[in-house]
Amino acid sequence: MLVLRFLNVVAPAYFLCISLVTFVLQLFLFIPSMFKDPSTTPLFSSALLHGSLFLYLSANALGNYILVIQNSPEEDLGKGPDLARGAKGVAEWPDGNRSPASALPGTHFCRLCARTTQRHDHHCFFTGNCIGNSNMRNFIMFCLYTSLACLDSLVAGVAYISAALSTSFASPLAFLTLLPHSISQFFSGALLSSEMFVILMLYLWLGIGLACAGFCCHQMLLILRGQTRYQMRKGMAAKGQPWKKNLEEVFGKRWLLGLLIPVLSVGSDYHQQKEK
Image (cartoon, rainbow, N blue to C red):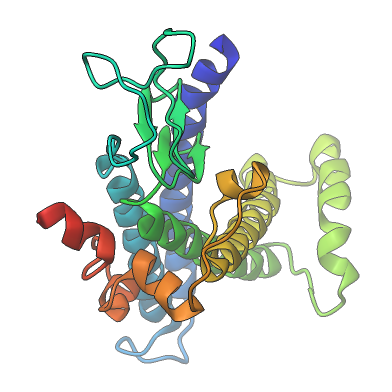
């Protein structure tokens, strides 16, 4: 448990540090290097277009990241008729010992968050929070826009390294051999430390982008089935309802608004019940 608590603190700090480094490289290195192209007009220059795209992707990623943390899955117990409860409304095992776990399907008690939630999906260490009903859509949007921001940074970084080192990436093997070749040049003194740092960040952006994209696709498949990761691990059956209904429960009826800007799940069944 001590290791998990330590990871719950280190992982968000790691994400924020990577985000800060990405901002610095984009705004003070990649984008200024694009302004050196004299063939483009200032209004439609690649630097302006790329900078606008990067800021939009980053704003959505960080905005949804904040919403995931702010909208913690709330305790929603006491709706099951077969759940025995004590004086304080805490679930009790048959032996009379109180436990913060619930007998309701899909409900799980997270010791790190000290919270019992329905439709629990998993605990995300990078946000330091559990993912459930109230923040599932924001978590998926966070993964989506983080992967897109990493892809955008990867393309900009490759363009910068290609111009700085006069390297061609026309061959598919050029990117695979870039790291070992750069390490040998760095220790021989032929490569600057700043350029070596950018090359390391290229592979880091690639790894984070692929991981977030894969996680986003996996979560979408589970949502279409009407199931969470926790239910899948426990072997619980998925909801027997149409996939459109499953999507609406997570994304809401006005899903397009949440796709473009970081907002709550507007029009979802969960928030409608919460307002009542």
